[in-house]
Amino acid sequence: MEETREETPQDLRNLALKVAGLLEEAGQHALHDQLNPRNLAQPSTENADRGPRYKLEVDNKIMRFMSARIADIAHFDGFWITRPAESRPGQRYWYIGKIDGVINYVRRMSEWTVTAALFEFGPDNEPKPIIGIVHAPALGLTYLAARGAGAVRIHKTAVGEKRDKVVPSMTSSLDGSVLSYGMSFIPSESQRALDVASSLAGRPADIKRVGPVSLDLCKVADGTYDAYFEPMLHVWDIAGIAAGTVVVWEAQGTLSRWDGERIHWRHDNDVVASNGLIIRELQHYLQQYPWLDSINQR
Image 1 (cartoon, rainbow, N blue to C red):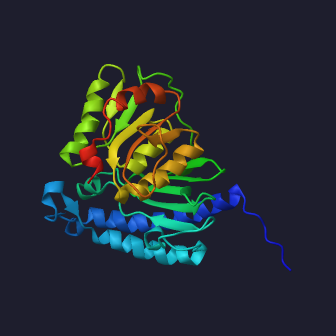
Image 2: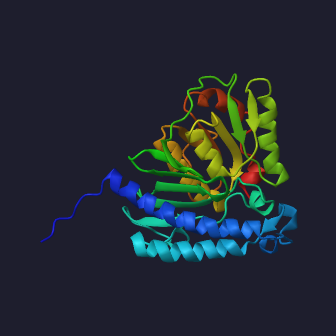
Image 3: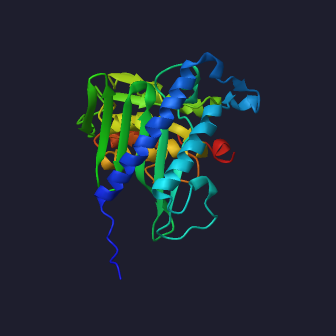
């Protein structure tokens, strides 16, 4: 009887590298579409009171391509969006994201990503991402991380590929820090982000607003930003959050909801990530603007 070899962190890292290669291929198709004017989507009129919606054909292409190719590498128990209502400990599901940063994509900005995460259900039947890949095709950047194997940033340039270990900044105070924040197109949600940014005025050296969430999280992980916060990230943002979260965790940064509790992978979240050194100071500001009941009940 053949003995089963126990999985190692390096096994997960190797799997992450294979999936990163697939994401790079899918990202090239998405980049081609972005540079082709006739392929750019227009806002949908559906739910106009909730802000613009974009329906991108390239999202369908990404999902079809990634689903088919991942099935050939390591299918595990399938995909997050088609998982059963109840899952068992040890089961694993891939979550392939649509384009994260769709407005940036449509406006031909470079800051958008394609993402993939692998969730595993623990003994408590709660899911947790154990692999995360964030690929930014227009920037030539890929971040990947696997449980216990650390996080890596891969930068492809005209003179070759550079790989770096991802580590957060050592900034120990909000004073002089560089922060990033995200905001919704829904007024009641975006107002909370703007209120926090306003209350912080005079302390950070700069507060950036670029997005998307997956890339902002990775930029906290690699020390570009000292922290990032965003209120009311929705369930459709989970793929990007999950992929970026593994990169933050493996870089030894911190990530939670604004109230300090863990992220819920089936619900909306207020998200804050940091280098781990300024989180208490930042949470003082975040907790002045709690999750409104009117928003929570939507």
